Every structure is written in structure tokens, then in C-alpha cells.
Image 1 (cartoon, rainbow, N blue to C red):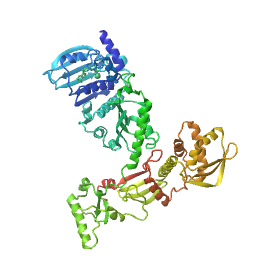
Image 2 (cartoon, rainbow, N blue to C red):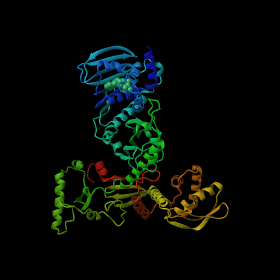
Image 3 (cartoon, helix red, strand yellow):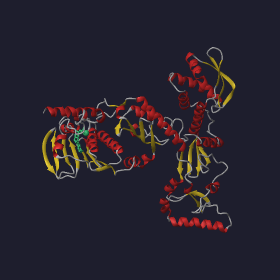
Image 4 (tube, rainbow, N blue to C red):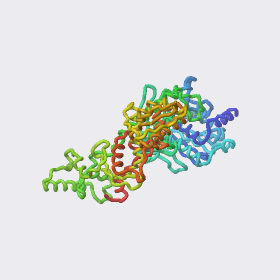
Length: 606
Ligand code: ADP
Ligand code: MG
């Protein structure tokens, strides 16, 4: 009896809600070396939970023992406690759960012929008997907290409890792609994923193709820590933190240190108020993870928060910058091109999978090309179009697509954009080898100049300055004087010419060339205001970024936006940016709509 009460008290502490029951059962299945796990629930887990595995199972004695308090088979010595039980329950989970539910366990080891069935109601053993059962363990928990009304009323709605339970199951499925994992709600499949070779496949199985396509791999390490996983590609963002998922030593965790460092690393890649998708696995010495937290809480702390933060931040930043540089070249690989008979031009090849839409077989499309070649030979022209055998210089065929208005090059000669029109405001439309680009002039402008600013600050004093026709004088109070003195060199570096002009007076005689000269003084005032708000511990680049983003005192344009020429230059400059895909705020600078999209929409070749 005393035990039963102890169990219920423990249950109060450790079994918070249906999802925490599932968590415990899943961890046990994993510990039992399961290769396949199935989770089913009803009514958010309030009325029914089943976790079934094909793990090592238990014989009848072991099964009975597993329901005794502190009967864990896992911890033998007190010193293990620190290492192993960081997140665990020290042999309390099963008895705790069984004390507050109707609990049925069926289990069999490979060596036993018969399985055992144990039925426990509100902590009282009702029966133990033999049963037929495949090797493994199946635990069913129904009427959770029915016997403890005080606890039951704290459960949230079915929808809320379901979403906790589903989220938790997904986390475990992500942490263990090697396990065949299914989740069912009252018989309806939520996901069913076979064992996967890698995380990306698992993500696709659980979250779908769209989400998987918004991610790219991450991997880096130092002597003490290792990080791997998937994170958003530049420009991808989410409205909540729900898709920022962290694991430490393979366990799902919540950690402010990890989530803040990630958000910070994506600062200029994701719009303000939105979050990068990320599924990240951190591995480090378990002794560096703080174990003195409540066992059922996922929130963890690190012994050396600062080191973990810096490791994550610098690694992710580095990765993002590289990705910004290397990200999908605007031109696709050359072998995706073919000569089009009708237009007499090189065009992106049709996706073979789409050929049937046009009623053409692969062979036909090949014959067509051969036809073209022999025609060319007849007319005596040199064979400048592709044959299967020899490598082709596609830039030749490409030239026909290009007019003198071509915009710059990102990685090679195929990356050519041609301005079509400026339909409205800041919008411009380009045709590209691949399709159409919809381009936002102002967003591009901000990105281009933001990177110039970054360069200027890094390069120490190479920024181009322009003189103001009429130097402007301004007054500054004591705080502002201090800021100007402190940041004087930085301001000069990026192209501001400021001199002291009597007590508390300054004269601005030059500003960076990217700034509209009439906005020079406003920029300085904004800079002072932002610096004052932010206090001393700021990096000049951050202040400049904020000034640029929030006050947008950069060059203003006459109504009607940019001229054709300006847009063409902008596009050229943008394409040579480190991160051409987003403005400093993290909003997109352009979208490319591939011709293939149009073909899919029109259901025929365009
Ligand atoms: P702990 O996991 O901390 O040992 P639990 O109360 O969760 O404590 O489990 C008690 C014991 O029951 C485990 O140590 C293990 O031996 C056994 N057990 C529980 N679930 C399973 C399972 N799915 N397969 C095999 N053995 C299990
Ligand atoms: Mg356990």
C-alpha cells in the first residue's frame, strides 16, 4: 500500500500528461534495442495509449519486477546515476504509470515460448497469465489519471494533448531514423516510416517533401563538440519555433542556449519575427550537460553555456555564409540543355518524367535532335549543336537567347538575366535561361549596400566617400559626443567625413557613396539614436544594420522606383553578393519561377 502511494506521488511528478507516458515507453523500447516501434493513441492519449516494440522483451519474472519501484535493470552503481539518468527515471516510470491508469503489458523474450500478460488497475495487480505474443513488448495504458481526478482535470483538451503527443513521437522518430516507426491515432496513420538511412529521408517521411526541400545539411565540430543535422537554406523561414528542434546526445531537448544561438546565426537570413527551420544534433561529453534538473523536463542546461553558444553560432554562421555563396547556381548544369527545333535555340531540356504530358516519347525527342543536326550539316553550317558523343560549348547556343541588355553573371556564362519590364513600383521582371525572375528592387538595393557596408567595416578604410556640396553642421549632446568619439574611426571607415566644429558642434562634409547625400545627416542622427538606445556594448555593424533596416534612410528614389539601367546594375551587383537571396532583414530579394512550373500549369510544353 505504501508503495502504491509512493508510486502515485512519483506519477504526479513524472507523468505529467499522455505525451510523457509515451516518452517513457519509447525510451524503454529503444533501450530494449527495438528495430520497429508502433505508437497508437486515442483522445489525445487520455483514453488510450499503446506502444509496441520488437525489442528484447521480458520473461515473466522480469516483467513482474519491472513494475516494482526502483526495479530498473539499468543502473547498477550510484556513479552511473549521473551519466545514464540525465533524462531517465531511475526505474520509476512503469510503476508510476501503472499506478494511475489501467495498464496492460504483454511481453515475450525470444527464448520463452509463451509470452506474459500483466494487467494492473490503478496500481493493483489484477492478473498475470501466459499469452501468445511475438517477441517484444506491448504496453497499453488506458484511462490515464481516472483514479486521480485531481490530476485528470489538469489535462488539456484532446487537441492540445494530441499535438504534444504527436510532436514528441516525431522527435523520437527523428532521433532514430534507423528504426521503423509508426504513429497512429485511433487506427488512422499519422506517419509510417520504414527504417531510413539518413535524417533527410526521415524528415521527408514525417514532415513531407516541402519541408525537407527547405533544409540543407549542417555538420561541424571542434575538439569537444560535434553538431550535425539539417537547417534552413537562405530565405526559408517559419512563423513559429516549432520547427527548431534540438537533440543533445540523441535526446530531444529544449534549450534556450541552443535556440537563441540558432536564431542569431540566421539573423540576416530570416525575416524579423520569423524562425529558421532546423533539426540539429549536438554531441558532447555528458558531464558537460547539467543533470540537476527535473527528470521529466526537457529543458536542459550546459555546464559551459558560453562555449556551447559560440560553437553553435560560429559554426552555423559560417555554414550560412558559405551556403549563401555556393547556393544553387542560377544556371543549371549544362547537360540539362538541348537544341529546340522550333525556336532554333538552346533551351532547358524537358523533364523526361513530363514528356508523356506532351505525348512525345523519349526516342522521338532524341530523333528530333538528330534531325536537326543532319539538317544543319546539309546547309553547310558548322555543327555547333550538341551530339551525344562530344562535350558541347553551350555558351554558343546560349548567345542566341541573349540581348545586349544582359545582366551579370553569378557563377558562369549561363547565368544571364534579361530585363523584360518593370511592371510596378519596385518590381522588375527578368527572363532567365531557366524561366522568369521576379525581382524586388529595393530589397536588392538594401542587400547590395548592406554588403558594401560590411566590406567597408571589414576592410578598414576603403569605402568610397562622396563630398557633400554643402557641408551640414549639427549639434550633439554629451552622450552623442561620446558616441561620435568612440565610433569616429568606424564612421570614417565607411565613408563619413565628420569634423569637430566648436564645442558640441560637428560638421558633416562627406558620406558613403551608397547613401543619398541629402540623407547623410539623417543617417548620422539615426545612428546616434540607435547607439544610444542600445547602450555601449554594441557592434558598429549591428547598429548600422538596424539603421538600415528600421530607419531605411538609404537612398530614396523618385516615385516610379528604379530606372531600367539602375535595375540592371542592381541585379548584376546582387548576383555577386555573398547572400543574394535575402535583404538584410531576411526577406527575399527575388523569386525564380522555372519554365517547368509553367509547363506543369499549362500541361504542355511552353
Ligand atoms: P528504467 O527505464 O529507468 O529502467 P522503467 O520503469 O522505465 O525504468 O523500466 C523498468 C524496467 O523494465 C527496465 O529497466 C527494463 O528492464 C524493463 N522494460 C521496460 N520496458 C521494456 C521494454 N519495452 N522492453 C524490454 N524491457 C523493458
Ligand atoms: Mg524507462
